[in-house]
Image (cartoon, rainbow, N blue to C red; front, side, top):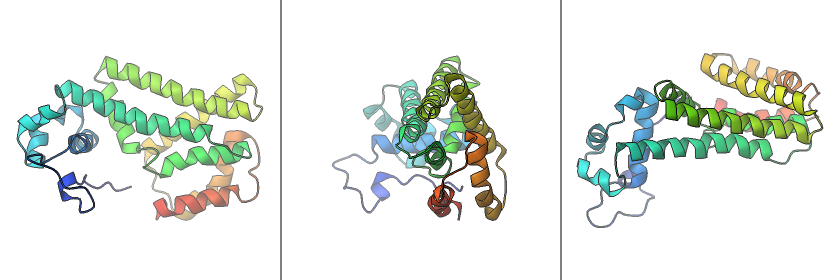
Length: 221
């Protein structure tokens, strides 16, 4: 999925006008920093270069953040509040069957408002260079797997089987995204019911796979 450069508040015709000498907002700093984190890695998230990209003075950074580390901490928090919270939310969503519940989780694989795949990869790369970040990442992965495990348990899977299926679903999806498969849309659509059977051991109910494909179509085209 192609990414777009973040639009600054001042350039958004639908945003409220900025007051006084304010040229950029805290969200502008975060959004531009996030864009750099994804495209170039955490080492390139530097206050001066971010200021130059937004055509503002570096001093304005300190209206919103105490330090570069404060900014990095905010980026990590934003990642958790999007990606980890997105998976947990969809795993906990009501569904009439386990296959429908897995379809809810599948929403995270296509909707960037629920899960930003490129951001997840960037944080994982960041974690390889930072022990504290890796610790946060490990806890986040555990939260996601725990939520998926509880999802399977709600549909009467024994605890150990629920954990196993949760891990298969979660880590397979990470690997699938990392592989960046260039498969035809027809093939991807055809495999949805088979994936549901593999992940759950049960046949999807009529219409479940089609409902997910209808949802995903707007992101896959």
